[in-house]
Length: 316
Ligand SMILES: [Zn+2]
Ligand SMILES: [Zn+2]
Image (cartoon, rainbow, N blue to C red):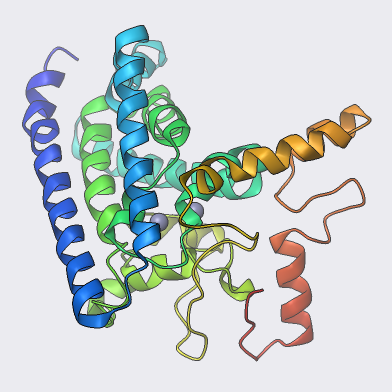
């Protein structure tokens, strides 16, 4: 563990440079989409920037009050508590890659399937367009606390060396943000990479509100987790992606995008009468009501696909 700083410092030092390059690309993408194509949703760009700014602000405040919170620090903490460490040999790298990818799949699946976690994750899905800035638009609670816990602490607890977690995090952040490249600017698929890597076409499907596409393509680096768990969904050219979420949302409003789901959850909780209803609203999938699961994405998808198994199914 003593070599951890030496192992990961060049990488953690490089990360802000890569993020800056992606942000500069995002600005160029906006200028091209706005002035050449006339298709940029400027309200959504400004909302995403507010989301990024708010996370930076809360991050600085948290650092002041409780000290820095990061995946790497939580990974170091998890490694101290772990009963074993796989080390840094070739097998440990394969193990670390597998654990990180599966932890990523699981935390992202839970973020879509547990309503309380969906409140944290839905800001990232709310925009009705996709561009580099959407990649940076996450809830501060998700970026600062949920992901460090699920992708730093838990893999380390499972014996993955923090240096491997740092490398996976670097690839995850850089590649994961690149997946949000605008569909207006880059329209083609990415050749042979489509066979084993998440690419913009897969991630556009993940951001869709089309019923057929909902709750698919959870990983951010490779297709491994989605392939193993049966959630892989390639883009079907017969069914163009409709970006966004199914609730009515003002995508130019930072408050509606980032806190609208919490408001709806609070309204439901106020009407809950029994513990089963409280827990159901908090931990069952979005769309669950005490009457059942008929309005969840899984139930709606099942109905749509059994009625029209071959036809493209549009979202609402
Ligand atoms: Zn998602
Ligand atoms: Zn995304």
